[in-house]
Image (tube, rainbow, N blue to C red; front, side, top):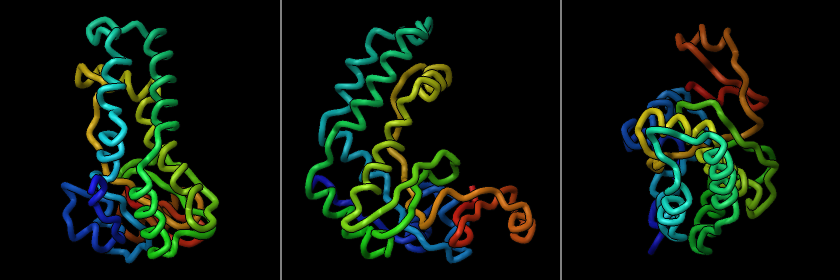
Length: 201
């Protein structure tokens, strides 16, 4: 099966280790934060399933990492973002995602998605089966191909490629920093929304 990776709750994800799921997941689990973690294998399978690595490689082939034409890069980045947003997950993957969302109790109401340890977020107002949440995932994945993100990778690694990473699905709207909560927990940043604590990046 192309999408064998199982979406898990925050506690189970933490038991899989920070190296695979991100250090923030462990911090959230310690505070019994409710949410779902989609493992990196799911994103990787999406890329491979529609041959995105090859398509993106061809798209960015004209870019010379040692002398970046920023105007050309901006145009290609926009095309790459559109490619991610308009590529389809296989139906088995979609059904797996919907089932996990329902099992986690995140298939109704507001949710937000982001990478563990990072602040950029996409929000969705979800009704069953969860199409809006899936679209938020696609927008978040597409943001990896925004001009600034690609330029940073070129500067830091000399290439445009990136590794698949886990993604958090958390209840409610995007959390905002709460200094009092952060102080009480002894952490630099605590993100809180209408349902409570949702982030310790």
